Amino acid sequence: MSIEENNTNDEKKGLNFVEQIVYDDLNAGKNGGRLNTRFPPEPNGYLHIGHAKAICMDFGVAEKFGGTCNLRFDDTNPVKEDVEYVDSIREDIHWLGFDWGDREYYASDYFEKLYELAERLIKEGKAYVDDQTSEQIAAQKGTPTEPGQESPYRNRSVEENLDLFHRMNAGEFPDGTRVLRAKIDMASDNMHFRDPIMYRIIHTPHHRTGDKWKVYPMYDFAHGQSDYFEGVTHSICTLEFVPHRPLYDYFVNELADETYRPRQIEFNRLNLTYTVMSKRKLLQLVKEGLVAGWDDPRMPTISGMRRRGYTPLSIRNFINTIGYTKYEALNSVSLLEHAVREDLNRIATRVMAVINPLKVVLTNFPEGKTEMVEMENNPEQEDAGTHRMPLTREIFIERDDFMENPPKKFFRLAPGSEVRLKGAYIIKCEEVIKDAEGNITELHCTYDSETLSGMPGAARKVKGTLHWVSADNAVDAEVRLYDRLFNVENPAAETERDFREMLNPESLKVVTGVKVEPFVAENASQGTKFQFQRVGYFTPDLDSTPEHLVFNRTIALKDTWEKVQKKA
Image (cartoon, rainbow, N blue to C red; front, side):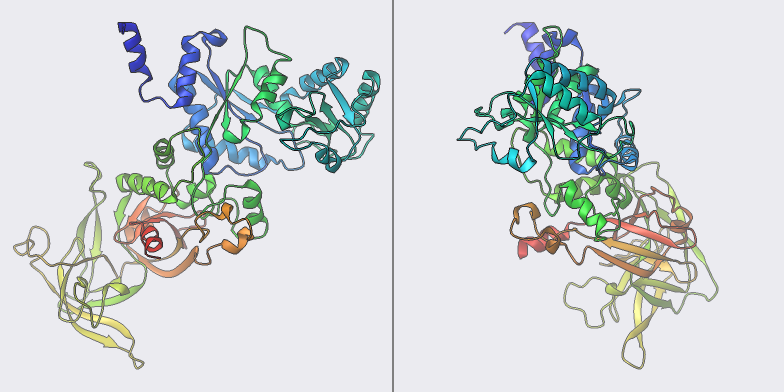
């Protein structure tokens, strides 16, 4: 092997198959050595985690090889589109860490050129107007093993087809009464070649072009041509478009020559357990009020994950982990959650919060005294520093951290036992106080004043360490505990059931009366990442205000769901 060949092989190590194709095309000098990808979302809903995989590919491969990536909105159906979706898509892409510069385009930018191309194909006898209904056209398509039937309107004259097409766009005919079809081959083995529809009539005003157009191009006709008009070199999409590729090339051939031609490449889409990715189903959840909007933290949307407290890096790391292949797969949502935990462990500030408070009175702690103890902000970061937390005679601990009659190996608080308060002293439970009904209302404990860090008894060991907050200084908060939106591993596979029947009724639990340390309240700005010690990772919700703190649990500290499912 030559030195040059060896260097080439070294460069290709670690590339996924799409990157290898791009690498080879660039080395071969195709398209003048240019690299231009595109991300082409439809502005008919919010982006989800599946789109994030496409974004990382489209923008990532351009970054890796010094190319550019366009953002092009596929706005060819004004019935379903909205400016709200355009704005949300822009925000999501930027949040993930990518930018398209001045290369923001729309399929509607090319409506004039597409219309002119359609006229040309009619004049060349390659397209015709069909008066049949969509049901009739579908019935004549045939099957993969049987040829389709030609439309009775297939052999109209060029003059009649042109006249009808112009009148379609003039608004003379109602929606659904006529379409423009490509005249290709009704006996083709590829069903997409059986005279595909190029244009349909839609009278709904367009969010950019208003009432100018009454006919709108179909995806298969608009997409490849838009790629060509923009100078896109690599049109990267998901595997369901593999059978569309010959049609993509067919239409591109009407424009391209030997100097430049876009190339379609397909990779596997992202499928997650306990999740649905259908935009139609997600829209249904929103419209029916089954979730609190597109950015509900239980939704697989990028905006929902952002609101829940996921980080851009965690999503990108997850996508890098699962990779890109030519085979469909169902990825465990636990892999995504693991990536989120890893990143939050690295960046989240450690704080104290008690979800279900139980009062503890330190009977030998001086009344009226407030002692400040030092708390580490993040042991994973050398320069994260510390913050001070007040300790007073009365504190709150987690109710679950006390048992009156504990089993063996219960290393939390019990009558006569000792535990350490995180960052503070060792305490011992001396007395359990109950109300008339026998409910535990508070605990009376003593503290060992020599066991704080730096004191003679600091090295004394006990098996349990509890989180806590000062009762005098704690701030009330609300927390929203989120779980999987669906309680079935693969909702898409349950074809006999309505997907709404599989919603997890325990996917949201709202807890009020939570006690957080003052430092949390002082630093609860949007986007802040906290680890409520021994509880989980939390972030302030959009609803949170200084007067009413609201926190979303991004994720628990451990994956208890996976363990429960395995036992079941």
